[in-house]
Image (cartoon, rainbow, N blue to C red):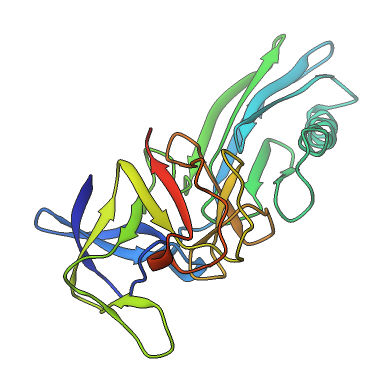
Length: 255
């Protein structure tokens, strides 16, 4: 199943497309590369009145993995307590298996704790609570990642071949800027991968924002996790080519 779109730049079948605008009823589509993605997601929680015997805690989810923070017990003052919660939070995402440069970074000041995704385009969830007399006046999400419902540049699907696609010298297929195009939004689709033979059935998938939004099974500082509810590799995943026209990897959209 495909969605009719308009190319906002030169596109390549088999890669992740994001909606950057709309022309009447047709989405305008760009590649999910770093220059086109929204800024890194942040969640800023604002605290007040944290005092003796209060406890701060949180639950979150990143790349499909849940994690818990705290409880962190009041220490000296609110500023110091928030700082201690940040230490616990950074340890929590480390223990969840997320290494530096592809995780969430926590910082604090006298009244707030800010969580920031390392990788632009990533989506995460986080909810703080205080047990005691302290309160949280707001928890503000900014720049939700492309797989979030509220994203300003949501992921539409995998760009597919269409009437506007043509072969280029040296191999490969492209769709010119301002041409009609299509994004697969449901069902089987061939995707282009960053390295031949690098995907196995039902493994975690990412797209590389620094490699033209191609699909990969290897996380890095430039890859964004693709929820399996959006795209998953099928039993035909093993491949010997990185070209979508040769069925690099057969995947399933929203299945």
